[in-house]
Length: 299
Image (cartoon, rainbow, N blue to C red; front, side, top):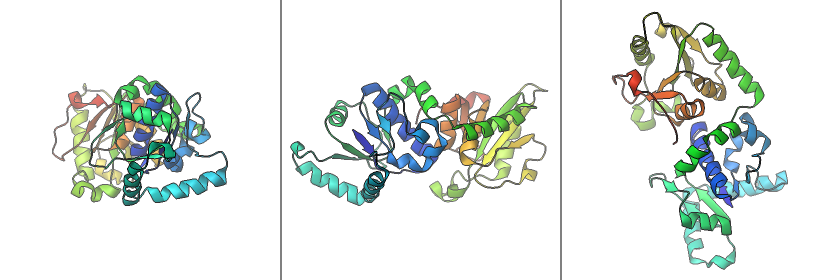
């Protein structure tokens, strides 16, 4: 059995990490518990019900809520890298027959850990393994079980209906709908602000992109951002706004025809989930062509 103890990043990061574990468990038949996803569980079909069908996957660690909360608080201490690394070092000196969990720490700069590796699969079938890290991946299984992942992480009905209403409003006039993810917030400092673009940058790319479609084609834009936008900055462009709810905006982007935005697992998930071609803006003056867009298949 695997327990994911590390809460890494925000929604997009946690979706991809959980989805890779689900895909790997579906492929190899071992149990997974992910209490670290609890903060977002209520928005998605399977996590909200803590029911992943025939898969041995769940959020709660124990059936009794008070016991589960007590254990999760204990695991919260283990989230600290220095604590986890220390415990992992001690555990390596203890014999396997002690029955204590195995601790697998993956430093954020260590690259990808292959969940299909034979030693890992042998361990998770024999004992409890606590995972601490971000880039645990099984890309082949993720691709094979993509339809299952999309079904499990469908929005619950109220949010699904809100997304449908936004898209219906956009589609009432648009022949081509381009979703634009304008991420601000933490991007003011992340990577020294490299991906913190002003509205003028997005508007310029939107105009250039619109010009690449056939004359007369109704190309419109769905703007989704983590801050209020001054729509005057997009004068002359046919724009729509999302609902403003971060989960609804994510799945509204997944319902577009093209996606544009800075590098982010948020837009990557929208691209994967809706099978929508995506282009990431790495630089403000980067040329953007329709041929640059491609569906993002995994993270």
